[in-house]
Length: 253
Image (cartoon, rainbow, N blue to C red):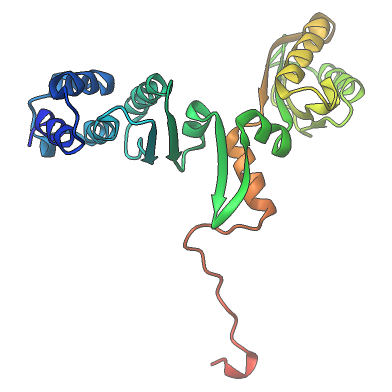
């Protein structure tokens, strides 16, 4: 069947009264107007995913369950899919499973880390604060790549004095320095990671000229790092991993 025929079929099954209006609305929502008369088996992998999403949306359900909707899509198709999902969220609940932390970060208002059981649950910001309240900073000196050891040591001393708990990488790379610092040591324990980043930016701006900083970046902990922290705490092994059992010494040979 063609894309149109698939959607009309599911519209009839679900008892939708105004079939054509609903079919055209869904086709526009998932971006399949150019492929409406194409046979479904001839669609690309990304467009097949869009058609599956369109079928799920037929009848304007209040709850939608999606299992890895962007699996197998290239980067551009993924973002189109995310934009589509973002546009249909108002007025409905979407439960989505994914292996992509980038996808969860882009779409989820609440996220759960699941491995046989629920290991953690909360908003994205809440999970970051509980399991990854760290800000990663990259400094680049104005004199890079010809910075002297004295210049870099002055930067290091300021970081360690101004930011208690900061961990500075031992090596500097041609006028570049990296360090990480707990967010609660910057903005207070009751503050969010976002306010900690803002406070750190202000501190760096105030010292930019004195320390000879040309550029800097401040990056909060990614959801990937949060995920690794959570599964690490629960000693979760990679899917399909089995530890080899050692034979007793008397059975060797």
